[in-house]
Length: 152
Image (cartoon, rainbow, N blue to C red; front, top):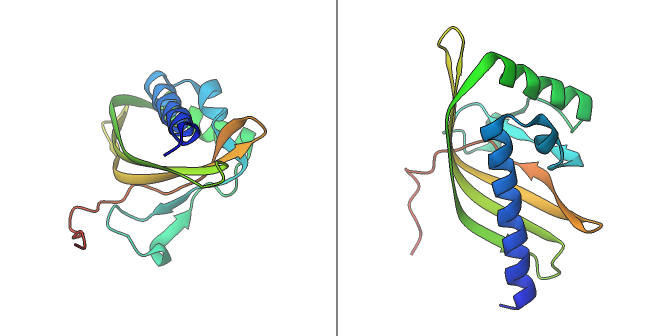
């Protein structure tokens, strides 16, 4: 692979790390810099809903004020117990203008009344190059693939 490819992979890992830092520190301003204006984020009804027929669009297309308000509500009402993320793969388009990262996440939030919200599984974060910066344009919800068998 070319050095450009490796440089882009480093940039994408930097995006994953920035997002992780935003969740860890509940930094709304940092979090809001990650999304592309056309971002859409489908969520499975549970970690085993691999068939997208069971997915939902909880927030709709990115809207700065609506999304910021939603994340602020989460941050104000929940404590972050842990946020573990491991990048498994980064793929870059041949043209160097698109990429995705496969990331295993284990993020646990707890509300004041003790109810837990657990984001656990594998996600795919899809990036597009806009001018000179990367933005997340699509993101899957967390899915559990432990029962899937690798084809040999």
